Image 1 (cartoon, rainbow, N blue to C red):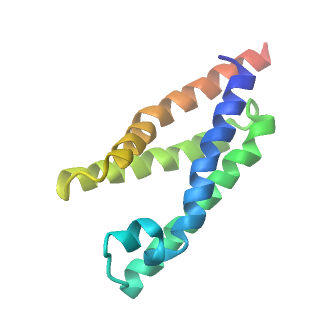
Image 2 (cartoon, rainbow, N blue to C red):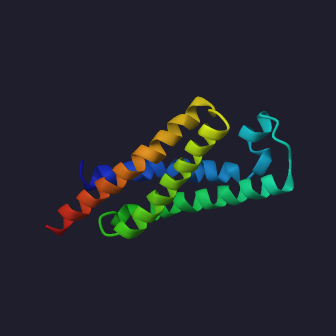
Image 3 (cartoon, one colour):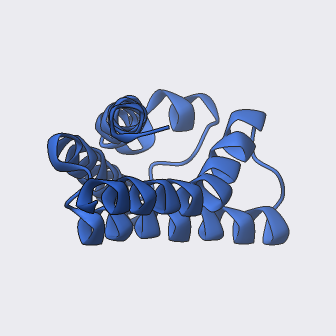
Length: 131
């Protein structure tokens, strides 16, 4: 699982925050929130749209990294570190509020387990590129 596989996996996974970031920027009008009857509270709507913009930015950063994935270790770790911390937030929500729909449990696993694995994979690719 070398450089090309990491590039492909990163590019594909970047589509998730790009697409969902755009959708989340709809705030409480986002299909997910609108269908669950979430009230249109200004602070909630504002925070959802902010989160959507940050999430979109993380996805764009991942796309930007793809061509030079072996040499951008710091930014790669920062982006995946942010995703990991988001997963920790989801875990806290699960413990304190309850389980979200099943796909979000899967996202949490990717964020908490997958993020460190992606960081390690990038480290191996970078190390192999220096040889």
